[in-house]
Length: 596
Image (tube, rainbow, N blue to C red; front, side, top):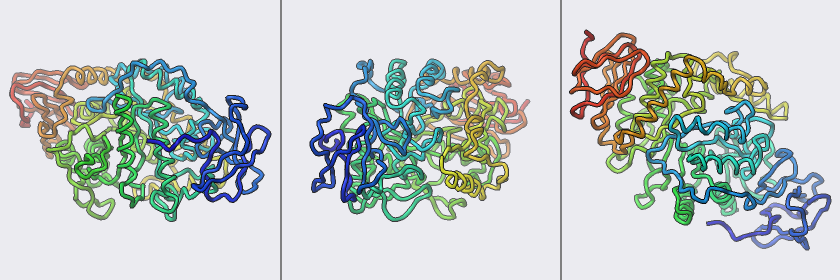
């Protein structure tokens, strides 16, 4: 799967005319081979200390650059690297057999804001809480080294190094080992579509970038001159997380921004190599794409002409649910009203599947063959870091909805046909926002980041004056979870909802049935009443303010939201904003009737 073994200080630098290795206080000459790789001359790595600082002096520069494949950056991304031997960690997960994505619940968290301490070791202390709400896989937002002390992680410039304020590489290994001991798998969010604006020295070494740009920066060179080694840089990075850090899957950020005309596409090549490693390891290894394309080619098997990834995010579910609950219809939410949009998403996976997108001003998406694709290949959420953090003030739906509505969001997410993902704190209706924060040490870069953030929201009609300054340390501090809220009346009530739904997912096989064919939805636009049938289970949600009732073929109440639901024979009565899960005597939908 990976390139041939190289020396610990070998580096690919085809652009350099001369190169010296700065290791400890010495400078060692390096010699270039025909393939653009350089190796130190006369250096015995075994003569050095196990942990030693080093960097590269490119073309007689005075300041050493960090290793593009650095495993450890204890002094930040602008300083020298430090050697780290991942094989020395004393793993205890020999019996770990992994977690398959089908039937699982994912929990997305940001290490720096998940706990007051903001470290991987502190996150370990919260694993029992995650198990209680039925989590199977913990998804970490990017942990690669970035400039500054805190960041969302998508400004990474050294993809192989774990951000030092989180604890560095050994803390990451402790976290994964602890998760496996607790029965939890780990998915790592990785960013291969761009590099951050501060600390990216890769172009000094080789053609890592090519002409052109996407939303976040210069394009990564996946198909131009020298792209073979750039692709290898990415593929080896994926292998590192799976092999050296024992993670169970990767979430691939914004794959629609990967410009690649090669055959095979990078994503297909990655899928092939990860499948091979999974077979060797004897445990499931999962690749999840974040794609804005609404194209099932991502998860279509390679033998059927697809890339062969395991799953992809479906933002259409979030948008349809968000509009149904909040009534917001600005920006990209505009197309997801009326309520039938939610029914279409639940039955067919995408809303935009070749339909006109008013936000994009063009037709968008490709239909899913629901006869062939299992529904669990779509990962959905009522909240996630994007849909909360990319709002003007990073506000959660907690601020706009009552407890019944929040419980309905959980009900539809956890009892729908897809793979559900929770976002840190939603399980107790966290009041803390998740805002966009950076800590760029360069004043001008910080100013440009803040200005760019304001311009992003122009099409949403949000007040520019309300957008927090990403560089303000308080923006980061406000975004940290307040775990004391678990003890509040609202926190305890919502936590009970998630625990009950987690129990039902474990007990009822209908809730993890992967077949689209056994999902049937009805949306009564006038009554704002929604039903979703899953075999002989029926999810009922009253999105309206007025009490409503539904006639069903007998009903056994399995779950109800806070305001209470009344079941009287074949009639289920729901107050405004309430929801329920019932078992019916005959599979099918429900007819809305005037409340008694």
